[in-house]
Structure formats: C-alpha cells, structure tokens
Image (cartoon, rainbow, N blue to C red; front, side, top):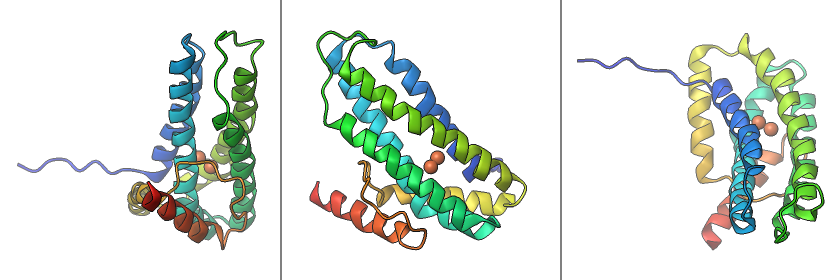
Amino acid sequence: MTSAKVSRSILQLILSEHQYMRHTYEQLKMIQDPAELEKSVRKWIEFICLHGHKEEIAFYPAVEKYLENGKHVVEHSLNEHRKLDKELKLLLEMVPEQENSRDDNTYWKQIRESMKPLLHHLDDEERKIIIPLQSIINEQEQERLAGEFDRAESVASAKPHPEMSKKAEEAPMENIQIGLKEKQDL
Ligand SMILES: [Fe+2]
Ligand SMILES: [Fe+2]
C-alpha cells in the first residue's frame, strides 16, 4: 500500500511558527506563578531566536535570490531581528517579581517591549516576503526549503544575538559559527 505523500511548504512552516509565537504571548498573560512565567518566557525566547536564526541560515538566502528587491528586504529583516534580539536579551537577564500584576511590573514591561518589535517584524515579514513568494516559489522548491529550514536547527543558536551581522552576505555563516560554538560548549 502506498501512503499519500504530504508535501511541506517553507512558507506555511514559517507562518505556523509565527502563529505559535503570537499564541504563546497570549498564554503568558494567563500565568500567575512567577517561576512558571519565567520558565515559559525562556522557552518562548528560545523558540523566537531559533526561528530567526533558521531563517537567516536557510530561508533569507532564498529570499535574496527570488525577490527582485531581495537583498534590501533581507537586510531590513536582519535589522529587525537584531532590534528584537536586543529586547529579548534584556528580558532574559531579568526575573519576574513575586507580585505578578501585568500593569505595574518591570518584567511584564520588558515582555511588552519585546512584543512591539516582534509583532512589527512578523507582520512585515508576512507582507513583504511570505505573500509575494507564494506566487514565485514552486511547490517542489518550497518543500526543499522546508527541509533546509528544519536541518538548520542543528546549527542555529537559540539565544538572542543583537551583535550579529546585519549584512546579507555575512549573516548566514556568522550564524552557523556562533550556533555551532554554543552547541559544542553545552
Ligand atoms: Fe519569521
Ligand atoms: Fe524573521
């Protein structure tokens, strides 16, 4: 019996990871216990960082190739990743206060400060990259890139790196060097 082959798409994969980030933020708001909040925020930051670094290694080089203004779009996105990394790094250095009121609380203030560049970037990336590419990249190439995106997890860093290169030609290799070094040091 042959099983139906379900093809995966890089664009769907990225969109679903974006939805997960947005959804997780909504879930963070429900958490009352500070220790549990800190644990969930750390996992959320890891997911966001891995996603961005996988994009830089395995997706942005394709964006540069397929979009007419690809290099400009990629460098704009790299800039947004670095801005977001800066806020996530600050958040990672903090611990939640015992009193977890979301209005008057420096930890929650920093979560919201991180959400601003995150939401802006997700919307921007979907509008300027994902939607235009839907009619440009064929199904076979979308599937191949989805595989590359998955494989990039073995070399990508799960930590924020605001200092990393914003240049399209340097970012993928710098990502791999930093990611591999962190995995060796574990
Ligand atoms: Fe993304
Ligand atoms: Fe991104």
